[in-house]
Image (tube, rainbow, N blue to C red; front, side):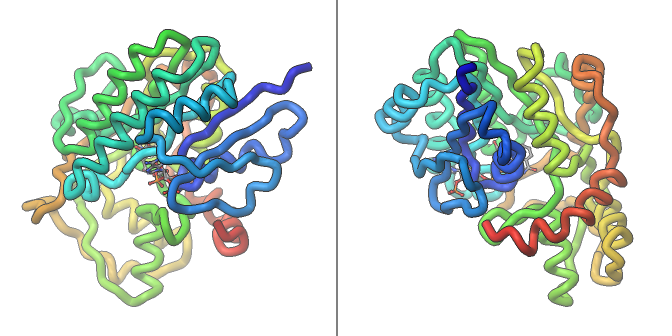
Length: 306
Ligand SMILES: NC(=O)c1ccc[n+]([C@@H]2O[C@H](COP(=O)([O-])OP(=O)(O)OC[C@H]3O[C@@H](n4cnc5c(N)ncnc54)[C@H](OP(=O)(O)O)[C@@H]3O)[C@@H](O)[C@H]2O)c1
């Protein structure tokens, strides 16, 4: 039987690395191609790694013509809202043009899975479903919504997966929110965490696994992927400390207030994942489950250098 060809963009990133690792040991079924830009990933034996700037249309077209993927996970992005806020040209070139270059080059026989964000919503309502109208509050979410529109023009089957904020083990180049909390506490640094910003946070490995299931399912269109619990950043910090036996004395509860040159984020961008749970027939993933798995995977972060 012909092996299915999988293309993962942004494999050196936080989510991309966890997703790509799910295909290790599946060489009999899949031929996996995974892209990076500035940071060459390690520990991905058997995966074909490709350095590419997806903002460049000719190189992207050549790559797609060569691979002719059956499934493409498009994760690559400038994913920091603050970096997008201060470097809008760069954000546009990868988040918008990069997506357009890919969509214009992919064969219609390919299934495209594009990762968008809960931040396309303004956070005034919370528990957003797929039928709610987006209203981005910062440049990052504007570029992601623009990329959603481009993906909607893809002639093949596609799925736009709007993700909630993820936690889990990242690396030096792609630190997660939970890495930042743990590193700050271990470095004896006091940090302020918002008590009035809510998300349906999900463990990155759970999100990666669900993305893989989505690619194998008949789900198409737009779908929300988040965790079961709506939680503030501060309360997440408290639960993280409890799970890892860390003192929470360095966590300071703060209100969102003025953004001081940072990107504006909505107050409550929690996502309803009812559609996904019903159509995939999966259980909801809680913060507690995520933290338990994250503890179990602790060796993953320290031993498997990226
Ligand atoms: N992290 C979250 O909590 C979260 C929440 C909601 C949605 N999302 C979405 O999920 C996706 C993955 O997020 P993430 O946190 O894993 O991102 P990330 O860690 O910042 O990784 C971004 C990836 O994009 C690659 N990249 C950047 N510019 C590129 C370019 N010009 N050409 C090719 N590749 C380029 C990076 O490559 P190098 O590192 O090699 O330069 C890296 O592999 C993104 O689409 C993001 O918008 C993330």
